[in-house]
Image (cartoon, rainbow, N blue to C red; front, top):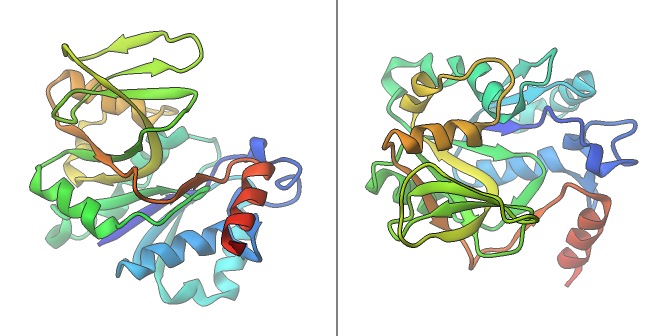
Length: 244
């Protein structure tokens, strides 16, 4: 199984920690976020990974070289211009299509600045059993932006947590507002269905495809530990959690 780690962002919320290094190398209890994410993937027998880079890209490459890629096959997707999550995945799509024998095999898309105890194997099984185009890890928690799912856990819209502005792409009498957690399982056939080009969010693609009837599903992960490590305070809290 393959995976992509989204690590190209500027990490502005993590300043001053990212003033002199990329967010992928910000440390939690002495371990860079990139190492933590790679270790999680490796624990689920994932050895083939592509990482997108932009901010302090050479530091990430040097770090991987120094650590012999942690015994994994790692490719790099350089972004001269930040492409956002959807554009970044589309640029790296060759990685998931190069082996004709594996083009039907789902892959993981994982933000570098989130950590969790989620059972990725269980999430992949859910994705496969439900023949989803994409499966998103979600939780019932407060957030600034919610995704809306119907009773069959199919994506049908989104809502801003601040002003409650709501956008529906599929009709549903009852919806659940859930927080997306930065981990996806994706079927490679999604890659040819992404009609957007350049800089775009993958959430926009999901909403567009959901409107067309594609199966973009929620994987409820409320029982798992999860933390967004996008700010200095959240990094400090993660360190405290590790000490408990």
